[in-house]
Amino acid sequence: AQKITQTQPGMFVQEKEAVTLDCTYDTSDPSYGLFWYKQPSSGEMIFLIYQGSYDQQNATEGRYSLNFQKARKSANLVISASQLGDSAMYFCAMREGGDNDMRFGAGTRLTVKP
Amino acid sequence: KAGVTQTPRYLIKTRGQQVTLSCSPISGHRSVSWYQQTPGQGLQFLFEYFSETQRNKGNFPGRFSGRQFSNSRSEMNVSTLELGDSALYLCASSLGLGSRDQYFGPGTRLLVL
View 1 (cartoon, helix red, strand yellow):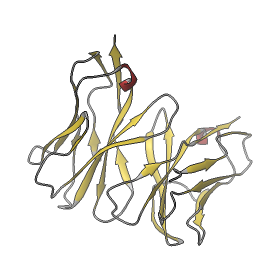
View 2 (view 1 turned 45 degrees about the vertical axis):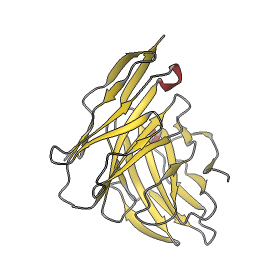
View 3 (view 1 turned 90 degrees about the vertical axis):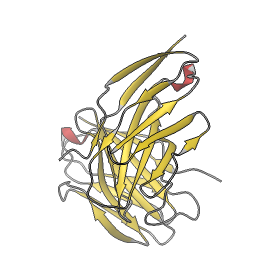
């Protein structure tokens, strides 16, 4: 069963505007972590932000914030003030329990237009 | 602090051959996970090692194996290569099990002809 769903294969955003990338997940484990990674064309996965299932507040890291809605099982990534360098693939991932194996979504290709 | 390093970065092999990929985690990190990324299947978990022991294994055939050394460096081996094994192989390191941070290396691009 698909555990992580990213419904937007591609997104466009104008430079300096904000954009939201969607992610929904499915788990019955009360303890889990949600991750967002950026993958430029070079291939390296760059860690952006993390949200734990017990975290009370939404995670923020600079221009990245995570809109965590636990009851709806969604963990959308918000990028504020988009920059041209933000153009890349973005992956949502989930880790359950105390293990480190992560399940990834299919990814969203974000293109920032000048 | 140096990041995760993977060698080689690029590799071309032919069907039936075997290949060994190497991953050196961030200093102090004891957990190493391996992932395969293909256009068709996306990112899939291969296996995870912690303290030289395999902790988890994904749904891959026995041709895929790995190990971890006492210095936390890890290798993965694919025997009897098939065309479908062409992929980007990513290694990730973290401090330990359940760590919130998992850092990826640049990957090894394997092409099987």
